[in-house]
Amino acid sequence: MPMPGGSVCYLAMSAALRALRRCSPASRVARAIRWLFVGGFVSVVTAFVAFNVIGHDLVAFEVSALSINWIVLIASGALLAVLFRHGPVTMT
Image (tube, rainbow, N blue to C red; front, side, top):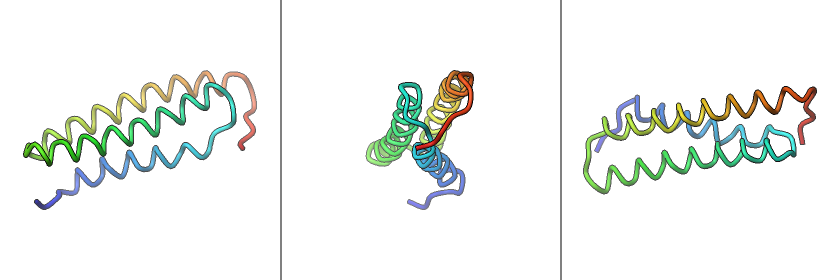
């Protein structure tokens, strides 16, 4: 089944968020952010595989990938605000 450009972009967005997990300090909030990024990536890849196995069209995958990515972005924005509120952050 050919994969339209939109689906590739949603997978790339999840992969980019997963890659950001390396750029965070060592604190409890930062650990939660890292797990959130990794969990979002795993969820999108799982949705892609599940929708292909079930035989749904790519629109269902695109809607679920967008929903997962937006939830990750909203939650990580709140967590990053908490992280940066405490002052300068040193990266590990």
